[in-house]
Length: 155
Image (tube, rainbow, N blue to C red; front, side, top):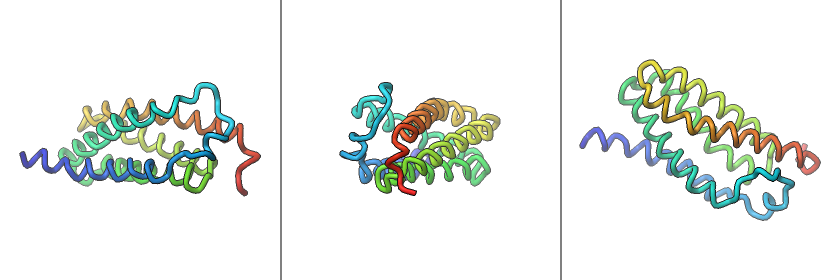
């Protein structure tokens, strides 16, 4: 039971990060942007991120339990910060360019996490693969939105 109790802070962290998406919602500004035809419908994001956040929490918890405050755990932590920043940058600040840079940095940290965790905690590395795929897609989507709407960007 103590092992499972140590999971709760990881779950709380990803819930807090997920709430940033609830605080900084797309709104009318986003709906008015020129978006590619392959933009998923709004209802997809909630279930997708819920599943991903559970996997992110489990992966961080596994690494922490096996390795403690290791390089992989530091990268996991940095990724959490970048993840929390994306909604604020994109929807709060309406800075598509900064959200794109953040998404790219998130993707890099995900890849580094997978590479650093795979030796000692292969399950944690595997749990990050769907996250990597989703963030790669989200980065491409953000790039497309940025390209289509650069004329609206603040300098």
